[in-house]
Amino acid sequence: MSKVRVRIAPSPTGDPHVGTAYMALFNLIFARHFKGSFILRIEDTDRTRSKPEYEKNIFDALKWCDIQWDEGPDIGGEFGPYRQSERTEIYREYCQKLLDSDKAYKCFATPEELQEMREVSRKLGTRIGYDRRYRNLSADEIKKKEKEGLPYVVRLKVPLTGTCEYEDATKGLISCPWADIDDQILLKSDGFPTYHLANVVDDHLMQISHVIRGDEWISSTPKHIYLYEAFGFKKPTFMHLPLLLGADGKKLSKRKNPTSIFYYRDCGYLKEAFVNFMTLMGYSMAEDKEIYSLDEIIKEFDPKRTGLSGAFFDVKKLDWINQQYLINTIPEENLWDRIKAWGMNDAYMQKLMPLCHTRIKNFGDFMDLCQFFFINNIPHVTKLLCPKKVTPESSAMILQGLIWHMEVDDNWGKEGVEEASRVCAEVFGVNHKNIVMKILFAAITGKHQGPPLFDSVEILGKDRTRARLLDAITFLGGISNKKMSSLKKMWDKKDCSEMVKKEEAALTT
Ligand code: GLU
Image 1: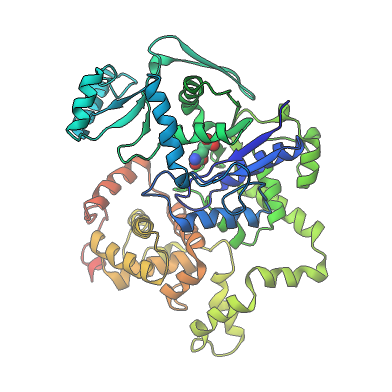
Image 2: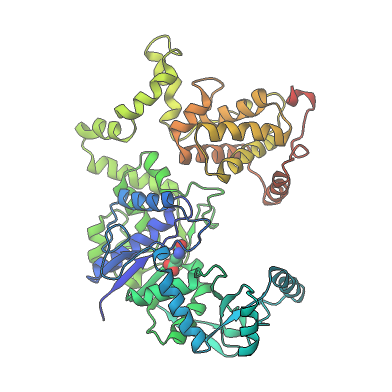
C-alpha cells in the first residue's frame, strides 16, 4: 500500500461538533495504525457562514480531546496552505482545466430561471433541479454573454447516461445512475469554489490516500468520482462511516441534543472517557471490549471491524464509561484537584462572587444559591416553568423562541439573552417580567429566585445554556415537528401571539 494519508476537513461554520471528534478519531487511529499521516484541512469556502472564531473552536476542541494532527493550518506542512480560503487561485486554475477540456461549462442562469426550473422539476417529480439549458452553448454565444458582463457559474458536465460505480471500503459496491446527478456547480459567480471542487482538488494535491467521512457525504461521492475522472487524477479509497444517531435512533441533531464538544467538557466529562466513547461510534474492538486507551485501539485496529449501521451517541453510555475512568484512573487523593481544575477553580469561583455577595446570609447559603452553576441535570418543576396560567406547550414555544433569537447572532452572552427575552415577550405577546423571565429563570436554575439571570447565563456559557433550554422543552412535553414548523413560520413573521394559548389577561399583565 502506498503511504496512508488521511484527513478531516471540517467547515468552520458552527460549534465544534461531536461528529468532528468522531471523524477525527477514526482518521487518526487509521493513520497511526498504518504509520501514515493525519491532516487537518479547514474548508472555509462558505464565505458567509465561516468565521475565524469557529475555526479556533475546532482547534481547541480537538486539542481538548488530545487529537494531534501532522499537518494543518496552524502547523503548516509540505502540502499547504491547509485553509481553503488561501487556495482560491488553485481552484480557479483547475476549474479552467475542466472548461478547456469540455468537462465543465459556464452557466448563465438567472435566479428567476433557476426558480422556474425548480418549480417545473417539483411538478414533474424529477430528481434533477437544473435542466442543463446552458450546457451546450456555442463558443460565440458564451463570448457574447461574457461581453455583456452577465454573471455565470461553472458547472460540471456530468454524464447523461450510464452508471457511476465505486467500491466503498466499508459498504462494498455503490452504484447510481448518472442521470440522477445534477450538473454540480463548481465555481460560484463570485469566483469562489464550491465544496465539491475544492475538496477533490485538495484531496488530490494533498495526496490523500483514503477519504474517510460520514455517510451524509455518500450522495456527493459520484460527483467527486466524476471530477477525479475528468481531471485524470488517481482516485482515493472512499470509506463512509455510519451517521451519529441519538438514543432515539434518529440522526443526532442540535435541535434536540447537545452536539458541541465543549458541552461535554463543560459538564465535567474526562477527555479520555469522551475519546473512548467516541471511538466506539464507528468501531467495535475484538471481544466487544469497551474500555481501552487510544494506543490500544491504534494497535489492534482492523478496518474490517468498522461499523456499517448507525452509531448511537447515547449519553447514558458516556456516563458509564466516564465513571469507569473516574474510578480507575483518578486516585481518591487526586479527585479534589481534578474537580477544582474542572469547574471550582479560582477564576470560575471569582466570577460567582459578585452575584452572591449580597444574597447570602452565611457561607452555607452559597451552595444552595449557586448549585445550578455546577450541576448537569436541572430538577425541573412544571409549576415554575409555567408561571401564571401559561400552558406547558406555550412555555416550551417561548423557550424555543429564546433559542432561535440567540442563535441568530450567536449571542449567548448577557446582552444576547436579555435582548432575546424582550424580543420573545413581544413576539409572543406576553409579559416580559412575569412570564418570559420566570420561564427562563426556571429553565436555567430550576428555581424561582437566585442570582441575576443574565449574568448567570453568561457565566454558564452557550453550550450549557442551550442544553438547559432544550432540556426544559423536552420536560414540558416537547414540540411536535408540525407545530415546530408553524411556530417557525410565525416566528419569522415576528408574531407568535396566536400560538400561545392565553388564559388572556393573566399572561400580559
Ligand atoms: N467540509 C466537509 C465537512 O464539513 C468535509 C466532508 C469531507 O470529508 O469530504 O465535513
